[in-house]
Image 1 (tube, helix red, strand yellow):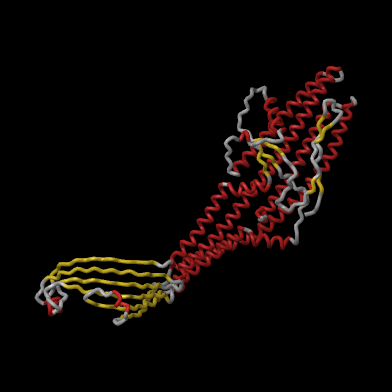
Image 2 (image 1 turned 90 degrees about the vertical axis):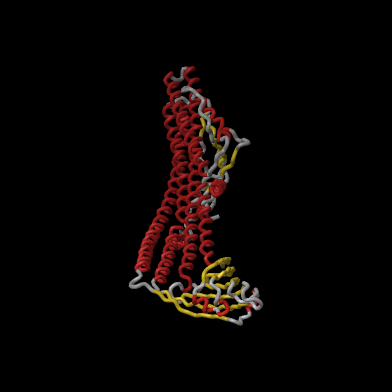
Length: 552
């Protein structure tokens, strides 16, 4: 930033004799702040009011007097300082749209937990009981020589199984389980009396493993969903940054609009003061015969016009104030008692770009939210292509199993772990669509087309960003030059206004010339204030374009 010392131009107030002038004293201030910062040298008091104007059609002067009295208050228990940093912080903390966007971030983060939950181990169990009283077939009778004469099977079964299964990142699934069953019927022989019912217990420990070798290898479907959830988190984060930039930009814009409205109100208030003092002086001159009655009428007319302009300036200030309250999500119980004190003034030092434009553009492009969102969308379509290609493969699954069993007349749960009676199995399962897999092919083509769309959008964003940065830089430079030119013109108009006042004091001036000079000067003062705010808003627009609004 280039150093520069700027000085507020004095605002002249005519005395009762118009021989002396009072100036609005504002000290010189050196400002050398980076973009987005502001000086803390000015305190501009404004008041929010929700009270209806309790006045008749002829009580405009009373309302305006109240306005001026409020502006004159220097201290108040309900004053609330407002700076660039404080308004931004309050918007970040309280703005409803930012709070909503932050909740959306949390929501997207939970989706990752949801998708990774597919790998969570699962405990399962089953308990069953059955009871049967059925006739035996001839084959069943012949199969048991000890019970060939029994025509009825009277049997009850109780079974319990439990275990753990888990999906693996390889795409396979492993299961380990324990099974126990009790069978009680009138067929099982006993050593003492074959006619008495007896029981037998079966226990087993089993391990099962299934592993895809083609489709489903490395769990493409689950891994792709997890990856998409992570990419969506990045997208939501970029959208959150966009929302922050938007809200901070609005906050800064409204702050400077309020600053401009407050300065405009000051100019209008001073114009009313000048007109009132001029009216008093003209009345004295008419009484002494130095001026005609028409001069007094003109003075009254000018005073009324300035009071109407003051009322309009006050309304404009209040409207911006309420917009700020809405943006900060602030609903004060008694807005009529709230007084904001603006403590940040414009930074009128020149803005200079460090380094080349191309380096500047590359830095901005790397962090630009729109570019990040499109890049992540392209990556999401990569995952869609992976899933489509995996779905197009045949299914070939390897299955392995091992179990250890035990049979006893009494429950011996631990004997199943001895491995005395093992059983194992191995197998392959194969399946594939007949003809082309239309769904998988269509899914892949759609993903490729979406990628092409996102790449075209990304190229458009690159061009748009580069041109936007150039336009914003040009706007900053031209608004800075305009502000300085307006300052020089105010110096000239100040001299002309003072000259008219001196001529009038010695009896050679014309009252209408003074009003014209003052109107021209006040108009230029407002243009200068507007020029300062345009410069600030141009810097805000540039910071919004390059994403530096959120920089500390």
